[in-house]
Every structure is written in structure tokens, then in C-alpha cells.
Image (cartoon, rainbow, N blue to C red; front, side, top):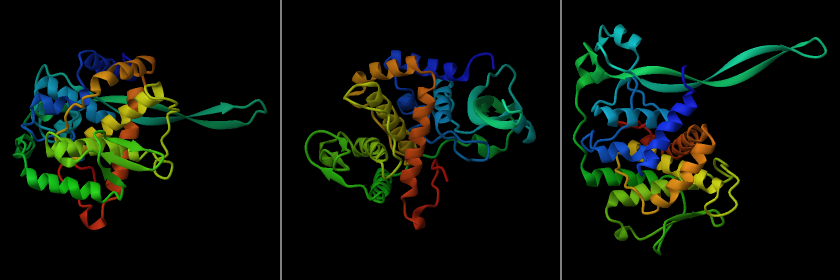
Length: 302
């Protein structure tokens, strides 16, 4: 591609951060989904994951798209539809590998696998004409708040995490392996409580007995700390989309933005790695749900 994919995506997120905006919270604050936020969906209805969630959320917000569905030019054509003239597509990426055969010093040949990132273009269905009607249906109204929060309560309870309440700070303690949360009543809304809990439980997945995630953190505020906080931020955003919760910017975001900017400017692949770690954390928490309740809900990756 003309521009390095890592640089292109990272530059967009850096630009948002420099404006004080969090790319992963934009869909909710923009109001383009009438309060119903789901992960971007392929034409089959399967959700995108990881970095593609952030990229397509951002594209939808900028263009004001209501539909979560995206497809390629070819997929639209297969449906007997066509992309409207003059429409520009949005980038999505996937990891791939190529195998290269190299001759060794002793004359033998050895195959080497080289990973790389590849991009392709998709269009929101609102950029396409002639698709089946179900692609154009507007998002359903927000489900009853009590039902939604009850679902979140069941989800987080099923993780089996040691969640304690008290004090005025939310944090994960690695030493005692527990999540500390302020009292439920102290939050501005039930949803802000669960969004905060999603953040802390993403941290909880880093324990060596779970995903064993370590960025070499040595002290508060260093690069390893910033990377882990970025993972927790994205993990919470993915979980909130899965559970139909509305996240709110934390009071500490302003302090973190500068450290995140430093990490992203120093490493163009950092946001891709953070999104991948965040997706693994969200998937891990989904994997702890009871089998009987594992039937996917709208917006939840199967």
C-alpha cells in the first residue's frame, strides 16, 4: 500500500489524542448509533475484532453512519448491489505470513515464515445501493436499562474474580490478585460502574495464571504502565460494546493521554499490539461464562 498501514492507523489515533479525544469512546459520544453501540460487523454479521473495531468505529463516526455493516466492493457486487459513485472506502487489516526459502551456508535449504500486516478496503452499507433490506434496518432501541445492567452483573460475576468494594479508588492489585472497586452507589450511574469494572477486570487478565501479560513495568507512569493502561482502556471499550454498556471518560484520562502519545509516537505498532492484547483479554473473560449462557448476543463475538 502507498502508506505504511501501521503509520496510517497510528497517525489517526495520535491526532485524536492530541485533540483530547479517545478514539475508542468516540462512537458513544458522537451519538451516531442512538445509544446502541455494537462492534462493526462483516456482511455475514460476524463482528470485527481488535484494531479493526477502532478503525471502523472512527470511520463510522466521521461519516455519521448508523449501520454497523461493512463489506468489500466484491461482496456488494455478489449481493447484486453496487457502491455509490464517488464513495471512498475504509481500511481494515489482517495479519498474514509468507514463507521464504533460504539457502544455508552448508547448502541446505530452510523455510522461514515472515509475518506481515495486509490491508484492504471496505464500505459501509450506507455507501452501497441495492442490498437486501435487512442491511439498511436502523439499530434497535436501547434495551431496558435494568435488563442490560442485570446482564452485565451476571457477566462479571461469572468471571470468578475476587471483586472487593470499599474506598474511593478502582484498581487491580497484582499482589493479592483482587479487583478493588468503590461502592456501587458512589458512581454517577450504574453503567459507569460496570464500565470501570470492565477496565479493572481487563487488568485482572494479565496475571501469570491467566494471560501472563507483562510490559516490563517498573514504576507508576513509565512506558510499561502506559501500555498496560492502554490495553485496559481498549479492553473495557470492547467489553462495553459486547454488553451494550455506555462507557464514560475517566477522570484520569487527561493524565494518561500524554503517556499514551509518547508510546504511540515511539512505536507505530503499539496500538496494534494493545488492541490485540485487549481483544485477548475480552475473549478470555467471555470464555469464563457458563456454557448455557454462551449463546452470542447482538454485538458479542461468537
